[in-house]
Length: 357
Image 1 (cartoon, helix red, strand yellow):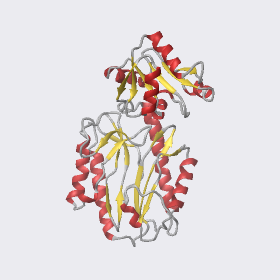
Image 2 (image 1 turned 90 degrees about the vertical axis):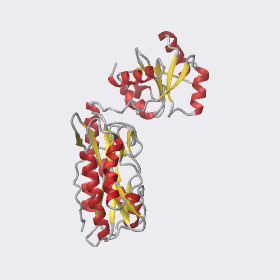
Image 3 (image 1 turned 45 degrees about the horizontal axis):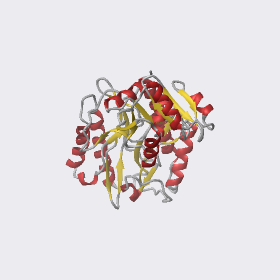
Image 4 (image 1 turned 180 degrees about the vertical axis):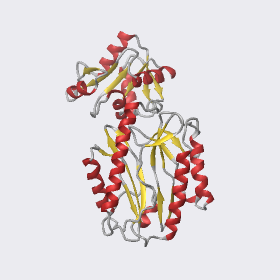
């Protein structure tokens, strides 16, 4: 049994279930490596089963090396029949389902057709601690992001639209081996920098603008998440230059405090106190960071009310920001691996304020 499969079974047993029914795409990929759109996964103490129809049978056999692959259809060998055959053979009476992922209609369908009690299980801790092979992949995803943002800083110029920058960035990460962006890329220039999630628009970038770019690359199924803010020229507003140094100090201080057994809310407090003491506390309204992995947002959360504690093997982001309506904003973000006695930055691109022209 793989480490990932054991984690899944242990989480299920700890919450009152003998097996796990996995229907979300991200957990199916995490456990089996399957990247197709349609499959059902059942994890038991003795095996991990991947049930697919004829469209995905060859793909599943190729990708799911640690699983038993079963062919299903809509008539004679349905998913429910396969599950019932397995639970009868293995004497399973309770099956855990992803309580924050399974839809109401899916739950109705499975509960009416499976001869076992369905138990809601919280699987958020399943992907919390990264294995060595996952860290290697995430480092590559981070390297792609670093190289791509460096390329953008070489080619960006006044007169380009934010959407043009977005396209150049996408082509670069694809050229470097990424499958896709981790999320809709944020390219927020000038006044739009005050929008924390200002996705790329048709706005023309001007010589006096600050520009915030927040993006990530998906590599072999794992996400990176990088934010850099820079000035197009020395015509940029001096207040934004001042704000940049405040955000940088907050980000570096929070990052340096990341180590095992530190409460995530304390990391948030370090960044938030620096920004608040500088007079901008009301302009920093989001959390300082979040977990990262197969999904762009995973456990743990790093905010004012989070209750988690950092542990070795977690990967988190550190991304404080200040956003001034009508003026612009600054955010700086890195991906960080928690190690035995501290942390390592996975994203390594320079963070000192850069003037493009």
